[in-house]
Image (tube, rainbow, N blue to C red; front, side, top):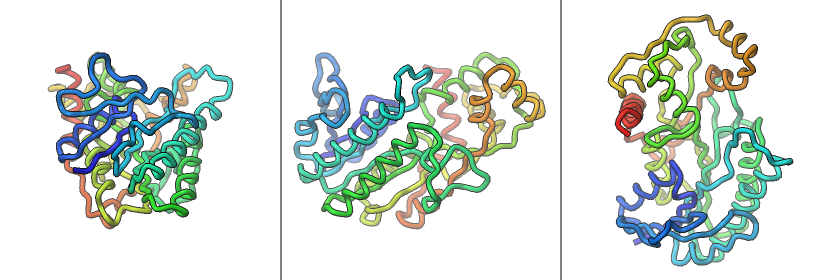
Length: 318
């Protein structure tokens, strides 16, 4: 039985990844900042190890004991109203130095494969044609800059060592328990307030948390995954109105949409000081994730339509 270390194991994605690995018969060590009170092993057999803050000084020895693979999810991610004096330095401390400390500790411990979960933000924030793995990176925010720097440092180390590296760049991840913008959309839909997005035609790529967990497990074991960078998605793109309709179907209702010209919405958002938020909601960001199929033969186990309905249903039943 292979033993796998998952970092960020108590997060939205980490919980699903751990559950998926356990269901496949892996032994899983869950790295968390602090071990849950009263339990180092839960009822599913998940073993928790506290590692404290992730930076250049983190001691990973106990967490890595006996592990043959690592899925590194933990990161300093997007923070609203970040109050640190130098956000990029703070991102680098965790996402670059902390990642390298883990990877080098893993190599010394005999880990054979390291799966690093990066971000589609490494490619950029918007596009007119789908991003590919071969595009020149254009990170626009400190978080994405730190993820690119971590990728490059890991690749340099991997070129000189025996531990295999796989890099995965997901777009926005959705599913039960989702935080951030997806949760905000669900809250908006639940109010039944009419939403002025029916005329929006921008498309975005997303990945359901089930599909991401399935793909990361594939990257752990597939012979052809080593050395690759993969963009991942549900392999379907969706407009904002159709996204809202899919979530609403899971809630057992229709999406209350009406049409306002997108240009007007952009101007109104700018006047309200919300232009950056509107650009994220109304911009196009698609990925060409075909490499996941051509190299690994992978297809998403859950369709976009089913994933959106599951997410809407979760929100109403939680």
